[in-house]
Image 1 (spheres, rainbow, N blue to C red):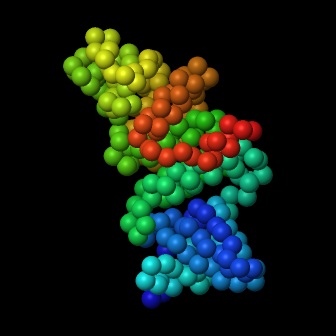
Image 2: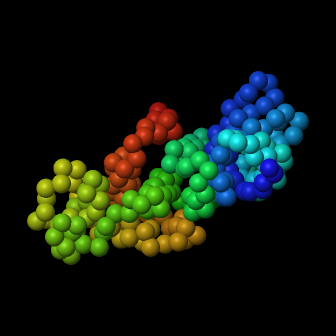
Image 3: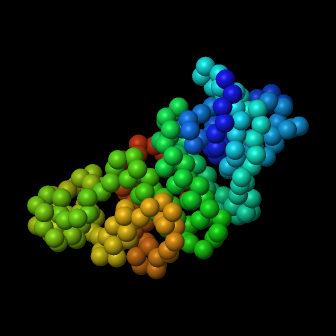
Length: 239
């Protein structure tokens, strides 16, 4: 059966000399495995990591075959800088891990495209883009932190954060093992991100003090809720 959709290539691997196995996150089918034949002669740009394209596919029982595609965006400027490319690959790796095969989730694709667009525009700190992406993705996946009050007693005082307990904590409820201090600036940023639609997410940057605290907290939150060791993060630490 021939189907049409839109998607971005998350991974590519060669098969023999001319063919490729692609992992694509699509608008209509979620994460899919797609085989591209004879890519040296046709569909070269479409069958490349980071290529976001309109796709025409032949649907097999447990995979797809690329018939043709039209590239909408290839994010070439992202590929010109090792740091930009590494952060973009992190976003792809995250979606590769949490995206479900044959289960459509348009929000995941939209968040991914907006995140890579923000990296390409080069107007916002890369760590901020990563952490904004992480928090919104965790919210979409059902791991939204409760920041409205102390999660244990309901007090309006919010001076700590627990990733394990999933929210803010007051000074009287200091019994969470993973508790870290949190300031008003980081709380405000997190609440702002959770309220925003995806379209408005990557429209602000942060000053260094707030940025460091915010990104540290989100890093902890991801480690608690996503049981996966990101290869791209290991690479970023090495450069």
